[in-house]
Length: 395
Ligand SMILES: Cc1cc2nc3c(=O)[nH]c(=O)nc-3n(C[C@H](O)[C@H](O)[C@H](O)COP(=O)(O)OP(=O)(O)OC[C@H]3O[C@@H](n4cnc5c(N)ncnc54)[C@H](O)[C@@H]3O)c2cc1C
Image (cartoon, rainbow, N blue to C red):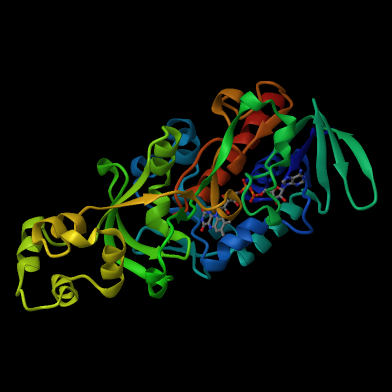
């Protein structure tokens, strides 16, 4: 008799574990509380499914906060592996100029359809609208619309996701099955940050600060556009700084964002430009120095008026504008979550130390990364690692 494995959650991590186990010949049941699979994965595809990143693996690994932990898995199932895996499913992919990897069609739906079809052909059984409500040793309690029942398995995989976008299924209810000390509390990651604006900034809401350098700690400078929103700032640049911002919060320090609004010119050049012709209006002077209206408005909002006419002090501000933030957008809105099941709560096979029947994978684990394809890559890799772990331990 083949051994029976239950997987809770039909997101990318759970589906990847199912793929490994089905190919080894296990009987795999996936319980998914939503009426269909991988709703967050489909949502990720709405703006272009950035599935991985083709940068050198040593750089790639360093994008994760727990780089050493994830390293063996992400190295084994890297961007190149993902591209090959998609190709096997009939989905061609390409590497964008930034190194990001996308399916050519950009969407997640064709890939998901092909994947689910292949999993079903490999014998994986899907139980939708089946919510796991209890876990004790190797016994699950499952609830659907008409009944509540228990089922016993040779191994159980938790692939329930983290706690953001809960309407897509990842509601974090699984945390009650673990001890508090097994979980690092979740925090918003890849989320907007908060700054309250005066009415003067109304015209800038939704507008980008183009091509700025941004940092929290000078050794982690990042470059790109930042969008001004009604609540503060949003963009990939902000997401990249999330880890540093969170660490400032954890140390009870001010969350301060620093911006160089004109990174292409030196401080000395800028001082000269700002000295300009005294008859010019300040706005004209600033424009000629290279600032657009959004940047000018931000300066007027943040910099004390008494230094606006002082070329040296203004140049210093423009090249190092400090903005105090008051926190992150709510975790529910975050693209991903930092925190989750701790490395110390798991074996190197992703088996729960407190319950050897249970393996865990995906975003519910305590790792984090910025957007750029790193999230899905780690979900796939840890999903495969959990499948391999089960095979290694119970075959
Ligand atoms: C708007 C948005 C855009 C994104 N874009 C990208 C991107 O471009 N690139 C990238 O790499 N990442 C992206 N991500 C992140 C990526 O989608 C997630 O990291 C990934 O989906 C997590 O996979 P997972 O399998 O761990 O969890 P999930 O995808 O959250 O899946 C968990 C599943 O478990 C089910 N479940 C939970 N609890 C139970 C239970 N008790 N019983 C039964 N079922 C249960 C849930 O219903 C859900 O289907 C994006 C996320 C969002 C929100």
